[in-house]
Image 1 (tube, rainbow, N blue to C red):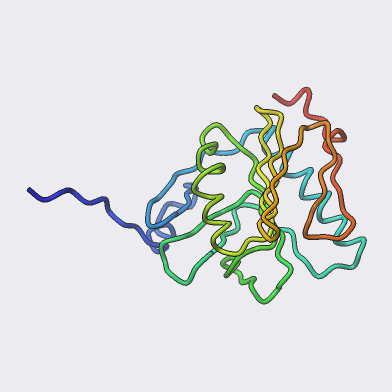
Image 2 (image 1 turned 135 degrees about the vertical axis):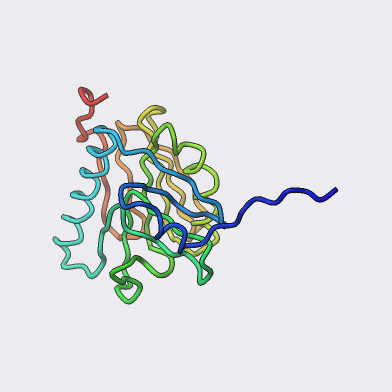
Length: 184
């Protein structure tokens, strides 16, 4: 008796989805995404401003981008991710369709529907593709997990802490400045 096989999807299947449907593709499997909450958007927007303002203040060449902007981590057509935030310092990786190759920094803001993916499959994909630094911002657990893959370092912080952005020399983000108390 033959075992049934899961269908393997490609980027073309992602592009064929209706415009209002958000999904990611990891190793040929589609993972649908719910719309972000207000708190999720507030955290993502705040981080985007902090990082963008820092880059601008240093006349930096890096670009900070946010979902839904694609990341194509490999040459195959079985992976398509949309991290919440990314910083890309090699502008040649950026096209109108997405980032071709590993961003320098990826930040995922955890939602109930993405928790397992952010801590599991996505983290492994980012590690194996050359992403230098990966943050998991988890409001429910009051935790910011930082993986600095480049030096094989791992740290955990709370929303009361200041977190160093390791891809830059002198940049820290003080999470105690983020006002999310009334945004649950």
